[in-house]
Each structure stands twice: as structure tokens, then as C-alpha cells.
Length: 80
Image (cartoon, rainbow, N blue to C red):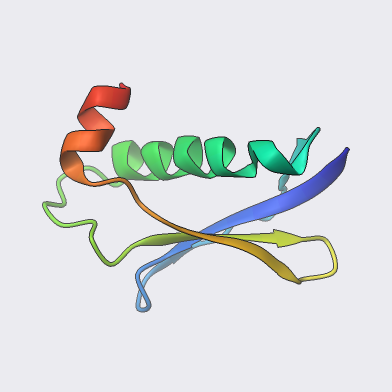
């Protein structure tokens, strides 16, 4: 079990995760990253294009362990 930070960016704008989240197994990082992306998309609603946005997952040493694109608009609607 480890704590990871899930930052979101499109290269210009950033949403930083200062607290992070405990993830029990590394295989679950992708699922958590998708939930974080969905939350950012809801909280920053009104945008039409999320194609450039990514979730970068870092361990507490700052090492990037996952880079995952935001889901496409249709995928996000199906997941909700």
C-alpha cells in the first residue's frame, strides 16, 4: 500500500493533487486515474475538448509511475 499523487494537465493548465491517495495495489492506479480525470472534467465543466489533458501519477519521491490520457467524451459518458 502506497500513497500516490494524481496531477492533471493539458500542458498549459494544471490541477495539482497536494494530498494524494493511498492505493493498495499498483494495478489499481489506472482506475483511480480515470476517476480523478472524471472528477476534474465535472469540476471544470463547460469545456468541449479534453483531448490534450493527461493524468500524471507520481509516487511520493516524485517519480512518475503512470501517464494516462483523459477519457474521450463518449467514454466518460458511458462510465458515468
